Image (cartoon, rainbow, N blue to C red; front, side, top):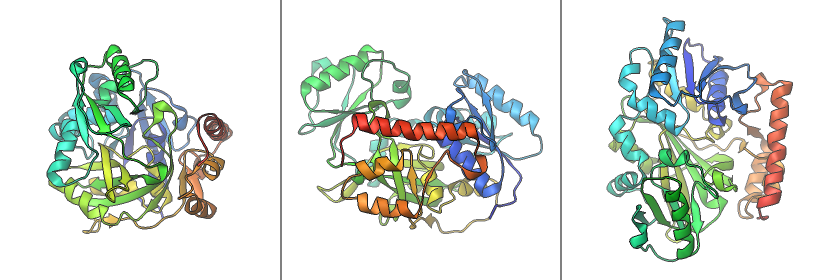
Length: 404
């Protein structure tokens, strides 16, 4: 049942995450969104539930502020809610929060805490302080030629500490994270990264054994009073296989987060967090604990799995900002619902790990959904793009994946 509330949602981004937020808002409130972004990405193209404001210079704070002020003048007297859907947008909103607060409503991490958590090494320090398990980690900087730290046996994982600087680099063989099997591979990869102009630190981390079935995601919303209002656990069925996409998810379903909920609730409330938080996790069979890799200071790119599972995740943010009363106790999601997909169902049938495949197929028979394929927003153009994405996923797995 749609809520009858008047507001203007301004979604920062035009990707699948941004479309998922706009769709969730439309499903819950019947309201159209305005998506502000750098590129006219296909996920938000030809949509009837949103309009887009595109400017390739949006990454410049001055341009973003000017664009948002224009929207404020266009819609006077109506609450305007900003929702960032990317790391750079979250960073911009945090930095410019004081200038925007008079005209817009939003929940954002304070700049100092934002910088601390965006930096993976500082984030791990908070994990030490408040008891979140994470893989054994060492630090590498541009002086790596003088010697590398040791963290145990190979393989190891190598990734950038500063993800915002790293994302704009261009060089052959670039990946979000590297699984490396020898010292020579580590040195060769570091040469490529620093040779491309990266100036920050790199993280060398122990490899947690396991496959897609051991991976998971945890989303939360912390309200303006600093209290966790929602938590939802997502069980991974398939994760991305292309090098540039490693760390993203291709099939998820909602499940019960069990004892992870109070652990992460305590962490978020004690560090003074605000807004959406998204944790990437992997179960470590060696000690029976979920290890956290990073926190994204926004809802995750696959967050629409929550909506398909019965958790209307956008309502916690919007009701909080509009002052609509909500339950005093946090909502801990425990239902399963439908299977969220980024790939064709055929890919799940063929490539899901054997240990989780029967459960994934059982859920998929009950229902599955793609973020971008929404009954209220269908058209021939969007159908063509949707079918093209599904076919492309089959081709990608046939080329790169091994059957589970």
